Length: 307
Image (tube, rainbow, N blue to C red; front, top):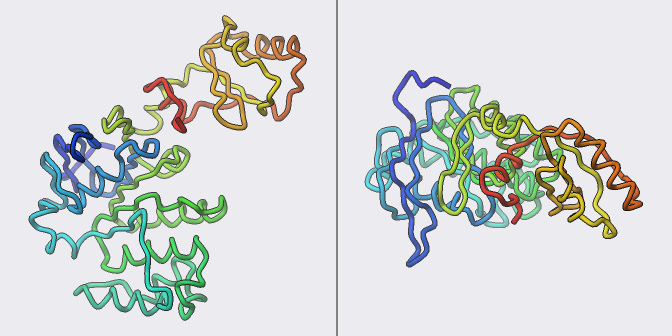
């Protein structure tokens, strides 16, 4: 994306320390008008600390501007123009979605109608139900609706699909895309690389508090697009060390229920299949795969995203 206007968010040399621990280590980036920028990385990488500092919720070092404002000094002015969906939030158990949206609407001079938000986010039928009776996905959609009640110019979404089932995640992705289509800039925090790859115009990868990469998903994937990959179901009898020793194999990821093998050699598949046959290993769910942002993370850090 080629920026044509001043950035909506400008971050320069942002650093956040907790006593002797550096959670965010001198990161800098811009978020351009109308884009979805994803901040991704494993749990504990510093993503939430960085974004909460950008929102003005934590003291930090460095220079941050959101819509031209200092989020710590100008919090009151900025609160009217941004929306926030936090990673961990709760509401009173016996408040209804309609009641809480109307309450939040009373805080702002300009709002979206509660009815419109309830219908858009699939909560109209639950408008009179108590918060404590809502499913996890319904609660999450309500928090996003609350973040949008003031027609924000930029919205912060922190781990918005954590705990949701696959269908609810896909539905939420479609609605986030609609937010951007209405002109709102989105800063999305997630540890799901597939979510970032699906939604984001650009992706910033954070590890150990450092911003180690920032570009479009397509450009990031070119770092590993030369690789071939295959995967199959893991079983206890497999000797993974023998796979890693193959000349055709560059790396093996066996940290989940599926073993993933990567390499640039033309004979990768045949070499792996021959080795598995020699080990008398029964193949289950064997298939070739395309590189993902998780592979980019492994390429950049030398460790798996789930480590």
